[in-house]
Length: 402
Image (cartoon, rainbow, N blue to C red; front, side, top):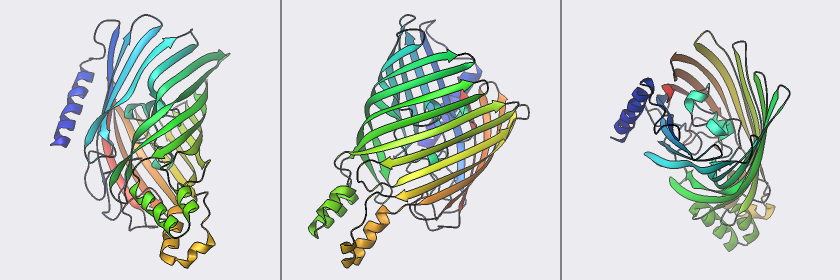
């Protein structure tokens, strides 16, 4: 029933888009939106393919929940300097059904033609496409590669940011600095639970656009705290009980642990050639069970009129936790093996082939095939019994904006 309601809503808004329903309330209030109606299926029940921080995904079944979403945005301009924006987003995330969340909610004040301040719920600029990663129509690929975007699940923070833009000759430079508290849920596959986290967050991003090429650098730091992480807390208590209290405290996230994420990205659209690439690094600044990691992807396509075929390759390399397992723990083999497994790194790679067809104004059809290969159980495939063999995911859908 929930699938039916989502499909009906998406089709209704798609019809509105074709009818040109883009602006309401005169010049002061603007209503806009975006959405994706898509189906996906993987070729096996022995591994579950999901988006970053998503529960269901697909495991050999047809699903509308992997990629489908619907976003609505309203902006009210009080004058030429002051405005307020709200965006709500419906999608499948950590729960087993579609949920609606408040994605953006901020007041914006233009200090000058080059400087603007926003206060409220704002985007954390961790990635190349952070501002529009949930807007399928704005992206060439069906979804951001999980190898890259699975490293950092923080999308927004409650706080403030400052944006600055300036032209240097033919180059447009944009800088953003943000500070706030990120709040949300994270899905734990081990016991199929949703855990709430909070993380005081600060970061910045700088981009330079010159002709058809955009370059971007971003750095974000957060102090992550997760309450009621039952499995980790149980392991920490067990370690303390057998004389390894410090190791238990190092592993846990009950007390805030500082993490850093850095990314470099590039976009180019020149003479029908479309290129997108990104490299990211997650690093623990304090002892924690989460793995340090490096990841990257590169995508290239060529536009034939309104049709754009593309190919991408993505790679994730988990370096393992910064925590070193004490040799003395080996006297308890089962516990030693469990800790080593938790702290180990992982790896995963994807080959992605797809095509985008802009068949109508503000609407595009996409078909994409992902072949995902995880070298260990610490990759992003879940319920995995096919390590080293690979999973193929086929998806097709329509992206639209209005």
